[in-house]
Length: 123
Figure (cartoon, rainbow, N blue to C red):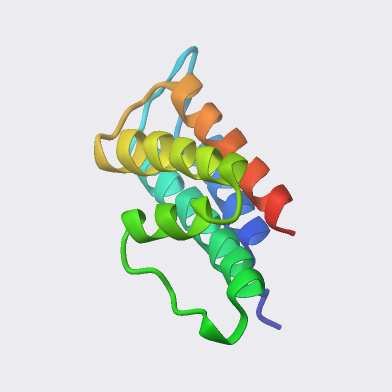
């Protein structure tokens, strides 16, 4: 039986990938490929959670946002705190972790914490 593709499932997969394959070495990860993949997966968890939040708030008018700017605009209309967490997750996971390929454990862990808070706020 296939598991449901929930934000929690994506975040769990990201954490598993980091612990099993990213080769943590002190304050850095040794394998940037898996850090980037895990960061992208965790960021998808954030987007799924935000989509669910927007569906609840907008109802039948909901259309999936096409850009981070649209996500920011629409989330900001409902919750400043959630917007701040979205921005943190975007910066740490999408830009720093996935796009730039940081190996900093601290940066990635901060992004994962923001993702976790987004998911908690949108449940």
